[in-house]
Length: 407
Image (tube, rainbow, N blue to C red):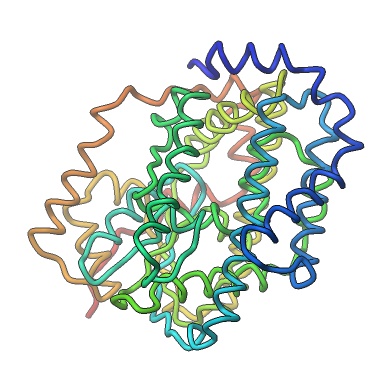
């Protein structure tokens, strides 16, 4: 499949000298970002030292890459600035309106699973009922209270539009893999600071991955909770529906922050997952790297996804049974008319004509776009290698029972 546009390739070639010496500019770049965030929010870096140092490690890890691109370097700087600014914005809002932290986040539904396992379909379906609500992309990038003035909201939407437009201009095929828009439900990975799944879409960030290993994500989930509290403050209280494959890496911290969460874990044959995820990663690397080896993408993807499954399966043994609902991709995608209503039933959600119509609409969507194409062999992987790496997980997926109604 095609990757970047000619314009991106030309810019990366023309401005290649501009990223020379980037290793020596990491600290000054972060310092400039922090100063800009302080001016924009009235916040103070003193309250966010751990966050800032984490981004310093992230940027340093990216800078150490051999083939860092000009467009990628510019994009990661903008992304880090957006995230630090929003963190300071959230902290300032909480400080000015401490009552916000008394907002109750009731039984949030959290969709997770390996990438490319119909998490987006499940997320959009579960966010459909009028009593439910998913965070929109622009809200994750620019978090404002429910009673914020319309001008501020419009500015946030416009900023998110620039983000999605830039992405689609750089990689025209990206919407075939994952469609994004400012006012569509989006996954928590655009808010969570350090889940390595997202950041490794920029390149082989070895030092950053090591830093993430064993990291305590509790503070990240406190931030996520504060964000939801801000968004629902002074607005209609609805049941939150969240989504991110990244939650597999930190199920314990997720449940500690939201003890009554209902986690919908989607499962799919990892052989199919791997090829699709590698294609997504290549589409992203083609922007952030001037050159890359598809086999390196395959090796990194396999390591990351097998680690996530191993970690999540270990943690799930410590969770209450009511915290988790397993959903097989063959059941969700192959028999949605039966399985989706049963999933709604398990979550205590209503099922009516509006929900049935939304299901049909979402199922029909992929037929309106070009098929997302990928092959496993392009990334130096074989079916046998993937199956061996995942151990008994493929067997578990193949034997996962269909959902049953509650009794």
